[in-house]
Length: 238
Image (cartoon, rainbow, N blue to C red; front, side, top):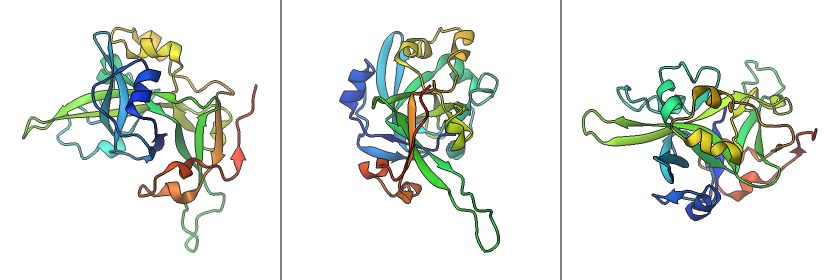
């Protein structure tokens, strides 16, 4: 899964990197983005690529209220075509969610017991080796409050099985799209078969992962120091 990530770049920089027109001004300098936070995402409307803000945790249009959003931060690639919560967005409302890194927690090796309760494990940051931002495959939708008619724009991150080397940390990872796949992912009319072909683990050698401070465990902590390595664990190069 992907439960936290870093989105530190300014809206101007993201707009330039993703060749998008900013329609809002997303906050930068964020190193511990958590579920239900507002996040920057790139969408496309009739050929116009835009940088906008969405709440992380998808709220389906048919939901009675948005309270379940924190449980819908990830959509599994294996079921995204058929899931009632995601299938409509998968066909027509896809986005790119920029991230300089995402965090995963490697499970603690000590067994849980009455005297030793379960620990959160060791946090790892995962990022591209070349230092450029990742484009995470996302879905978005609009929910209308039945009482006020106010609109809530929300999104989710599509996940798949982890690449062989990252599986030692966590069995799943976000789908990371290379620049050559951005247009196909964003275009509304891309056939489902072509979309399905993009839902793959990252290529070997693309990413590196390393242990970071347990400070990232708390959503109250933020800042660039959260990405500082403690002990480095890197993905082997093919």
